[in-house]
Length: 272
Image 1: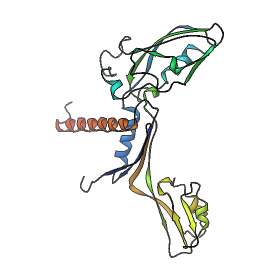
Image 2: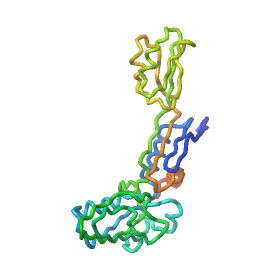
Image 3: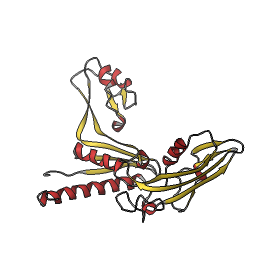
Image 4: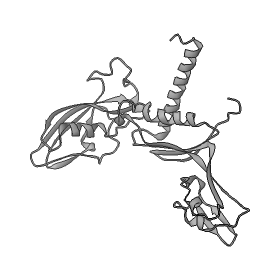
């Protein structure tokens, strides 16, 4: 569109979290990225479980559910060569990554005890407790991990947090008497009263949740809290299965493919 000049600034980036600022964008566009990151990015998770023996007190269904929700390494290298749900051979039992679990009590069985047929694809965390076995109790499980999408099941959702908020904006009515009490009402410490310089300082505007506690605490309406309509603070946190940057890039790629498909559909007169 005319005048569209979106800017992106990365504020922080860790192994499992990225926070960035999106400027000069629209809510539908930013929300589309959020949706794609949650439900359209492929991820590996245990899908088929064959419980050969389970002497523990945990029901088979519960144990299978715990296995499915155990995060597995799903970066680009791990996904290479694996079938996607839209492929014809995806449902075949042997078309996936085999995981075996054979243990005997007394012990606590952890995610590290899962033996993978592919050294690249393994549980992200070794210390996730799966089940507790008592004396002489045995466990024998064969399972298959496959690639899937979060739109089909939460176990295939790579993000634990995927959210945005509009960029906060705090202004003061300088023609009114300074109300220092409104600064102490902020639950996040965004504001600080400075009576020496006779003003209220904004310490961390991006930490503002726009709860307007300061506005309600002001008796004369000295402070105003709003937001920039086209600027956003975006945060993506993953379960460790894949880097958040990969999630973001793949989400943008999927969104671009959807847009291209819609353009082709329109250009062809809606014939397909």
